[in-house]
Length: 407
Image (cartoon, one colour):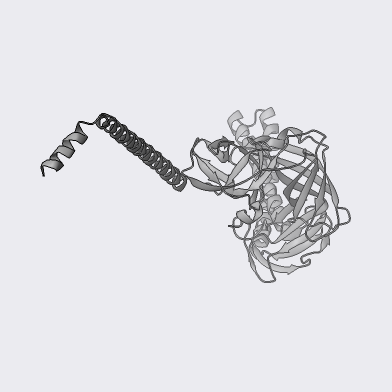
């Protein structure tokens, strides 16, 4: 035991003991530094991972909030050299024929589609009451004429007697006054006879001008009442040698609607044929409810091919450079706001830009935009009502506008 203690003491008191202690301390320092660096690396890595996860979560949240929209680009129309509008054809003259006297229809002589000349007899009406009134008026006229004749002779005699002072002036004036009154009564009876003769003449219904009978709304034995507020017209006559065509022209093109402007006409019942019309006049005023100008064109129809009441497709030949470039878009791009029509567009940063627009022609599923858009605008299809300026959106892959318009 004593030897072992001495051995330990000798080792502790040897010169190598301090060097070994310093080496152990250095080793411990390196280990601590390594552990510190490792802890720092772990801390930094944890921070970066958390930041990346947070950014990814934020990005996914924003992506979920974004509205996905489909867009289309406006289809530019060519510079306006032709304007196509619907039109309504009317006869040059068209008149409903009503009875001017009451009675029963005795006979009719023309039917629908019959060409007639002015004064042609269309029908006859039996009016027993009018005939009786005429006979009575003629009798009253004969009585008035007899009374006036005797009154005139009496007045002449009393005028001669007054000249010789055989009668008083008062008596002579009374006889002369009776003669004047009798003459007035005779004139009134004569006027009444003339009135009834003319009324009796209306028993014959005649055509007012050359044309074609387009309607017959009566038959033999039917009770006829005079006037236009007592039932349908007996006949309708139309002059078709020249037709009038009425077109409502959008305000955008009102400035180029000048008399003499030519237009080509196409009719559904005349496929492959084109007819020429000339602008005759305009209403010279824009209809406030439709924002259109009423234009009247004339068509030469001596051949009688075209029919009044028909629908026509009117192709106006506009002067070169008239109007402006327009764009055609599906009708579902429009937004109706309190300050007018708008469309939503998407800018380069995928932000919504609302643009006020003006419509030219409405084709039903498509509309023509004449003001407010550019050729490079990305227009939003079927925009929600909540769409606002500056809203961030996600743009879906391009789709066929016609297919989207059908949705």
